[in-house]
Length: 191
Image (cartoon, rainbow, N blue to C red; front, side, top):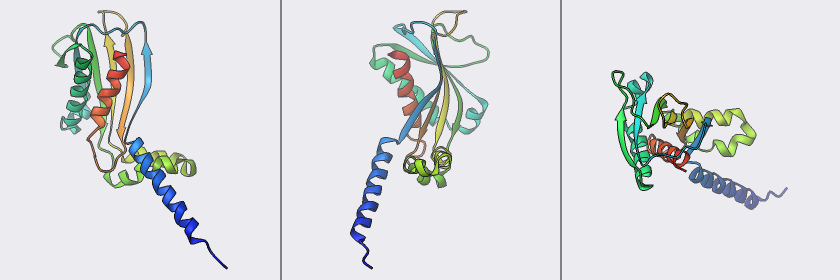
């Protein structure tokens, strides 16, 4: 019986090539879970970014992820011609008006042990279904941010949305999650 080992080798090579391209393409992912725009969401020229963090984030994030997120959003808005300031939320002060309000609800460093498995989850998803999705999200550092654009007092936000951002690359850890989230927010609210 003759086995064609060459074709088996090509199959493995192709699978590895597909995995590598999927990894490069899907290193950082974002998705808007809840999104609502009540009217034209035209940002004013001068607008503060008002930042609040949940107790969970205050206790687990060393500040790097939230700082990366806010700095990226600030840089993107400044590049579009906006004058931007950053204001930390305080219970004894009212929020500024108008404002971009970020409520950083949750962060997770993920599981470094699962991160390598999570990186190939997109390739395995057709065969493994929910298990592959669990691998991808279980190992990935992530952040959940509620975002509001409030333009007038006592009115509904012009924009509200919940952003989930994660980094599926096994070699970068936290790096890129905040930056990815900041870019995604700027694209959504400033377009």
